[in-house]
Amino acid sequence: MGKRRGHPAFSEGDEEGRPTGGRGRRNGGRGGGRSGERVPRKTVAERLEAGEITRDDAVEKAREVVLRILTAAQKSRRELEQSLARKGYPEDVVVQVLDRFGEVGLVDDATYAETIVRTRHAERGLARRGIAAELRRRGIDEDTAVEALDQLDPDDERAAGARLAGKLVTRTRGLDRQVRVRRAVGSLARKGYAPGLAFELVKDALAAEGEETDDLGYAED
Image (cartoon, rainbow, N blue to C red; front, side, top):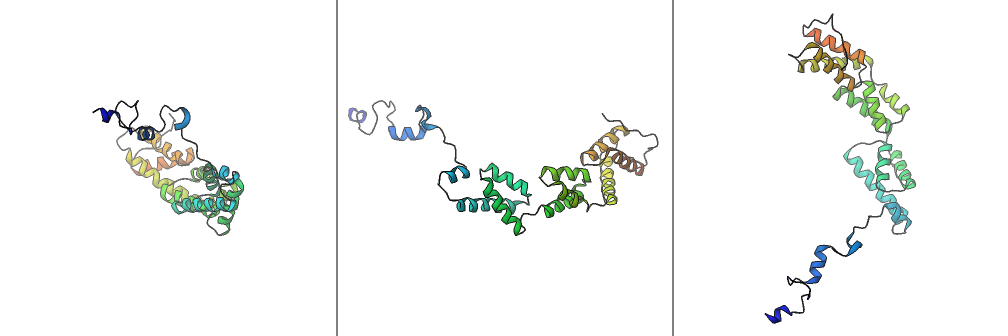
């Protein structure tokens, strides 16, 4: 027993007889002040400035990031700029990479905006105003957005709103008529339909169900 307590592989101060080297590694430097703190990872810009990577390395890394993003989903140039900036890429590297992607047609805000307009209108029933708001959030410039939105025909927009209004009032059958109107108009407004048009579409949908609408008035909560 005496030899075991005095075994040279164990620290004298370790009451449980564990190897001090292993214990220190498992604890990650516990009790050792700042030695166990995680060192922040350098950004690409910082590594470039420190000479740890070349500019060509930074460009190649940025190119790979953009390819991964675009493989998952189409993005606007502004969205890609923001993604690369968050990852710490220098502005001049970002510009060079995105310019090249634009030259080969992989970053094209006009095509992207047209896709958003088409899908949001057809699949979600969004009106022009609602789609315009999304284009702004995605960093599409005003001129490009207006050109893309021009593909929306007012009659098509009204028809989409009418279909949506019909679905909305159907879901609220059995409720008070005024409640049905408020809910349906509110839903249409959130999709970008002007309040007056939304109210008109909801009235038409209720009338198609046989509801009396001549005395109908709309008041917001």
